[in-house]
Image (tube, rainbow over all chains, first blue to last red; front, side, top):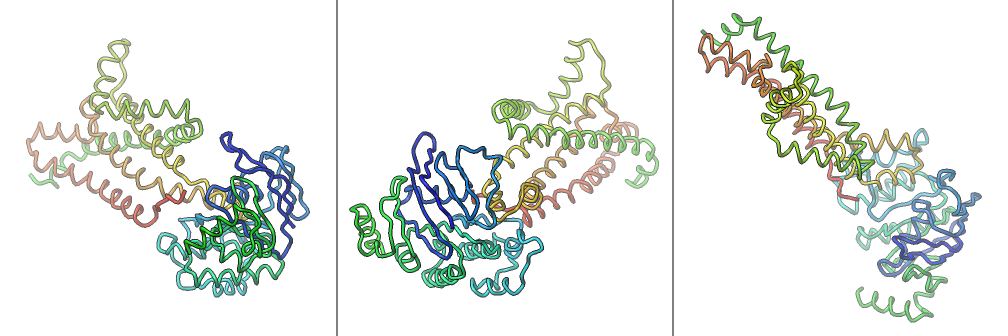
Length: 238
Length: 221
């Protein structure tokens, strides 16, 4: 379980997260939606301890973090919690295979590896370097790298942005299967139709705060004017 | 008299010139690697003080021809200070400083451009700081540095020729002296060109090959 309470953060004097709280249970998928600059990625980075929040508290599994604490003393939760970034950050000096297996050390499970390859349809480009594959293939590689670590909590930042609709739906279906195995997933996305398809909970961010949250039905029956407007604009674009 | 005859007849002096050239370039390469890497790393970490100093020297040496620097260190400076330094040391010092600044710039620029997120990606995969350095940061940085580094070192080898102008008995000066005795410029300077091509061409080709094969676009910041 991840419990984040009153997470706040300022960047260059501007408050980019304002008392955001969130509860992610094991096996649950939370979608975070909102316009660009709403604080979605900042929140993801804060609760994954990549960028420390200024205040608030966080519990990841059994481990508790309070943000008056010194950074040096922190025991990081990786790879029990791992993150897939919007920009992938596939290491350029390694092949796709090397990227997926680098952090496994001795824990290489061949059967699971093949399962992931099949799931993400990666066999064709496994031995290519990142500069030789497409954006969509890089994105799948980043996802495979995270999945091979068998995390308990998976934080995904726009992981379907470089995929075509068909691929995105296939991957979301598999994310749902992964969640059913007990993995808690937070999924940041612009795509409302994807969020409505897989989420147990939806959080709508605007200007660093949670404006509305609830079950996925809030995307059909929004209560706030801000979310109504966001959905309306998104539907027009789709 | 063929090139071969010249090499055989003057092998003693040619060899002594070769030893001086290799000694000079060894000092220049070694000091560049040791101090240039350190200077570059410091300039990356302390952008304000050391970084500014590096920028200042980089602009200064980019604006000063090597020959002018060598002459200035060899004649006016020593006259001003009323000291006499052997030409080899003057040349080694001048070329080393140029190499140190060049390597420091390569190191500083590569470290500045390194996308920190590659390390963050390693961190969230559970790698510790040592593993991140050895498996991610060092291999990527090394691949970025090598081609520019080799090209600079080839240039430094070629710059040792300038040392002849302050009377360092290196290969070019020896060739000039032999030519003054037997006047066979085509053969002598062709042999010299072959020597430099034999060393510089493989290094340049290797740098080019390495760049194409291993250097990556790191713009994914």
